[in-house]
Length: 158
Image 1 (cartoon, rainbow, N blue to C red):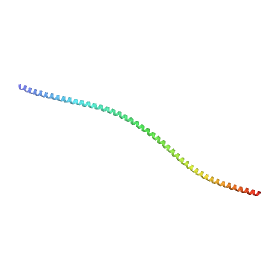
Image 2 (image 1 turned 135 degrees about the vertical axis):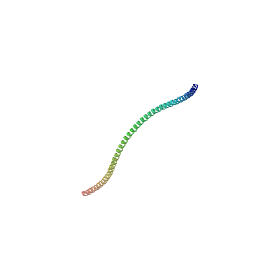
Image 3 (image 1 turned 180 degrees about the vertical axis):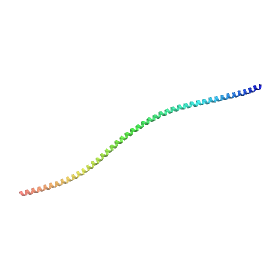
Image 4 (image 1 turned 30 degrees about the vertical axis):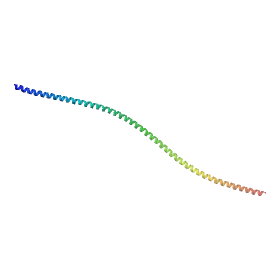
């Protein structure tokens, strides 16, 4: 029986040592787990902070994108207005150019008609001058004949 007690004591000592070792292991694991849990909490807090920052950045980016889209719409509208205005001005200038070309053609035609009229007038003036000279010569000639007839008539009457 002593031997049994002795063996039981030995087993008890071994088990006590084993329990102490297990308690130390549990304590070590608890410390590790606590440390890991703290690191996980810190990591999770960092992740939450990062997610919050990313959400704020995303909201800012969406706001900026909205602003840029509004500016783009205004610019497109402005460019469309300028394009319409330019087309209108180009159309107006094209019409003015066509009217100017027609006026130029009419002026060329009128200038040619006036040139022909001037040439005809010069020709008529020349013909009138020649006719006037001929009539003046005839007049002088007939006046001279008249004087001769009168002189002859006067001689005959004497």
